[in-house]
Image 1 (cartoon, rainbow, N blue to C red):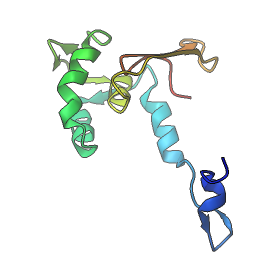
Image 2 (image 1 turned 135 degrees about the vertical axis):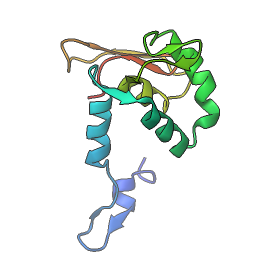
Image 3 (image 1 turned 60 degrees about the horizontal axis):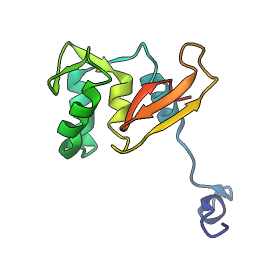
Length: 125
């Protein structure tokens, strides 16, 4: 649909080029955050949730996430010093999102799998 094509609608007068696009920091940050080896301190997780205005979703999110991250969450509460980056990334996803697809980007996690809005497998690549 041409009307919704932002690349043709929002242009910078300096170089007559699209003024919108993904910011590399966000893309690289998502990739690093969803890596299986990534751990985030709980205080940083809480700061991110509060800054994003998602505090009202936190309790429900923790109860859903407990099924998938038992080493990080017990009885709806945080345990240990931090959580996996996938858990923090999942806070942004809608609670009713279910998705599964072969990824082919990572041999260790060849499938992107999201259940109940929780990213379970695969780095965001």
